[in-house]
Every structure is written in C-alpha cells, then in structure tokens.
Length: 173
Image (tube, rainbow, N blue to C red; front, side, top):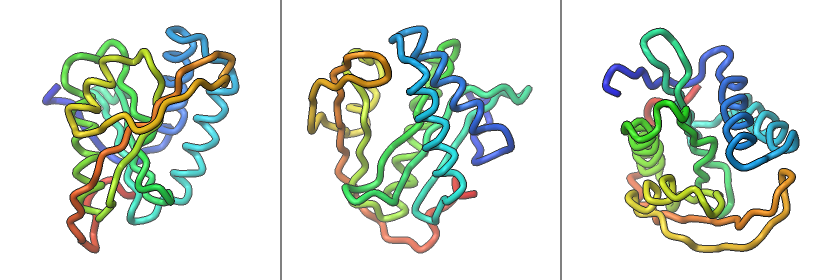
C-alpha cells in the first residue's frame, strides 16, 4: 500500500466517503437510508466548518480511485472524536487502515487533544483489534435501535499524550 496517496479534502470526496459507508454497511449489516443521510449530512457539515483542531484524510490509488478515509473532529466536549474511518473492502487487511488511523492519532496528539474517542458497534472485530492496537479501550456499551437495525453500540477511548503545538500539521482544508 506504499503507492497509496493520502491527502486532505478534494472535490467529490464527501460523496465518495458517504457512498462507501452506505454501500458497505447496507450490504454487511442491513443499514437503511437513515444511515446514509446521517453520514452525508454530518460529514458535509464537518468539512464545511473545519477548524485547526480538526483533521480529514482520504486515501486514493495512483489512478485516483477512492480507497478510504478517516477524520478527527476536535470540536467535541468529551475529547476529539475519530469519525468516518473506512477502507474499501477490496483493500482491507493490507495496512491501509493502520496508515489512516496512525495519521489520525498522530494529528490528535500534535493538536493537543487530551483524548480521542470513537463510536462503533459490536461485530466489527478486525476494526476493534486495530483500535485496541492503538491504545483504544472499550469505555461504554449499550443496545440501540438505529439505521433500521438493533446494534450493540460501543464507545472506545484512547487517552492522549498531548503535545501542544499551534500548527496541528497536514490534514486541514
């Protein structure tokens, strides 16, 4: 995966991130239209109002094909939130997810976030192992009926090791 280009925002990426989420989670977990519209709406709002403490990264192959994404939403009261982390199924298990997550964690530390958290759900075991390898730990779990499904929602938290810098580095718009 060394010839994958990881960048910030580019025209059309919000649609590509939304599409990959919608298709993947519908095919594998039965999520409905409410999931797609939530991803698209929240991602669009995030990208339109990014601040220096926020980061967004998208991965593309040399031909420009979208392969995955991750974001750090630093405007949360409970710490920074890891969001829109996904890798195209054809590229899973090749280290791309680890590269994206590494970017997000490093950015979060450099931006001075005291913690990083994410919401996911039970059953995404490879992703959970990846999160745990980066120091995330399960902090909360409960059943929720959303996106046309009953899921066991999980919140993982990674304590930060803040490095206070004024410039959080690449990933900003």
